[in-house]
Amino acid sequence: MSSDQPMNLVVVFDTDDYAGNFERQMCAFLTGRVGECEVGQEIAELVAPTLRHSAWYEEHVVEEPDDHGVWRPATAWPSPDGEFNSVAIFVDELPAGEVLSEMVERAQEFCGPPHNSVLGLSLIKPTRLLGLRTFRPSYRLDQVGTLDEAALAALLEPGN
Image (cartoon, rainbow, N blue to C red; front, side, top):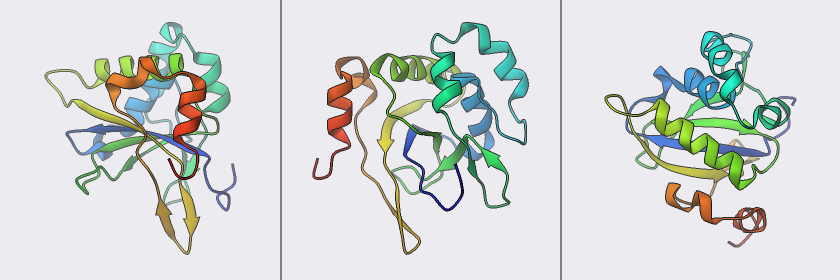
């Protein structure tokens, strides 16, 4: 994906700790994907055999350039409280419910006690207009298993 095109969708996990300390490692643990900086490579290799949807992650987790031009599949993202306590994973397609369920399970495992906690999940469809991004949270962690693909797609329709 080129840097002049907006990303299609962002899967955002809200946590209770500064995500800049672990966002690339968490992405590697959830998806097996790492960026050109290779942070999280050992984790990705370790978890690869355990990923139920590895083919989906390989095809649909995409990379975006960071502020230094380094391409990465994840970044620290502003959380609802204005801090950068969220981990954003860039994707080019709406994940199916079972893919999101696996990501949530793995996020809870990665962030489990005694470390930080996963507080929520949002699907965000960013737009770039005059340097501003707009987004809309989609649903809570406890709703992941209850939404089918049509319901997930409807959440991203304008006006919802």
